[in-house]
Structure formats: structure tokens, C-alpha cells
Image 1: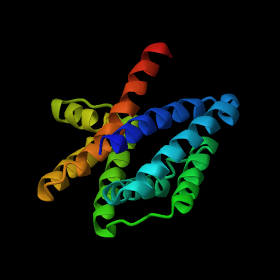
Image 2: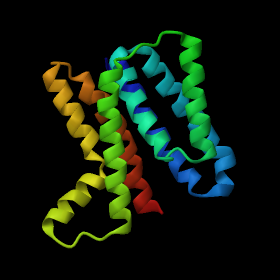
Image 3: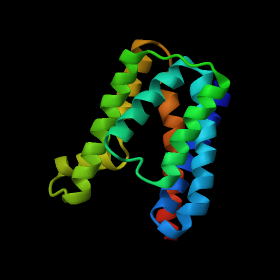
Image 4: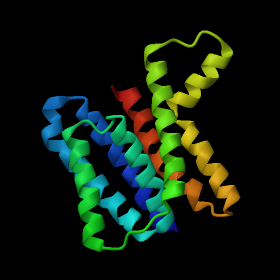
Length: 177
């Protein structure tokens, strides 16, 4: 399990770096593609290597794709690389019903985040929701519930390890940029 969590942690780092390069179009053609490829390989290996990880990340990736959040060359390369890695390893199975729970959580996270990108929180309830939106905690909460219900911590740790890597780069980039 530790190996999967390390793969997901570094995937989170590389996804956020690809995001950063995607924001600067000229650099995306080089560095964004490199980091998209790296996270695609790592996520593809993790998804192929574990039923639970596949369940989590197929749901999340479908939600992000449906909402057009994977809208850059770097992320297109990342998604294609994930698919090619899964095909190459040829070991893929998931629980579609549970993947839909992650899909719903991720979908709600992105909707809430988009809402607060365009609206200011004026009261304490709004500030709590803004915090939840900023860190996309709905998926985390769904994952914690699944981990408890199924007595399998990987349902949560599979999201948490990625998010730690992603948020680490977010904090660094906010201070640097």
C-alpha cells in the first residue's frame, strides 16, 4: 500500500505542476507536457495496480473531464498517458458504483470551487463553504465515509496522498508567484 500512496503523492505534485505550466501557454508546450506524461504514467501504474485506486480515480477523472477541467495540452497528454499505461499493464478492474460516489464528490467539489471563484463569502457559513471549496473537501469526506463503511483506509488514503502532494505545490506556488 505504501508504494501506491507514494505514486499518488507524486502524481498530485506533477498534476499541480502541469496546472501551473498550463496557466502560462508558452511554457505548456514543453514542461507541461513533460509533467502531464509523468503524472499519467504514475496514475496509470497506480490505477492498474489496485482495484480501489482504480475505483477512486476513474470516478474523479470522469468528473473532471465532464466539467472540462482537463482543458490543456498537458492534461490531455496526462489522460492519454494514463490510458496507454493501463492498456500496457493490462490489469484493470473497478467497482463502478463506488466510482460514481467519487464522481459525485469530485463533481460537487468543482462546482463549489467554481462558485467561490466568482462569489465572495460574506458570513461565517460562507467562509466555511469557501474553505471546503478551496481544498475540495467533499471528495475527502465521501472517501472517509467509504473507508469507515468498508473498513478499508485506502478509500481515503488514495485521495489524501494525492491531495497532500497537490496542496504542497499549491502552497509553494502561491508564495513564489
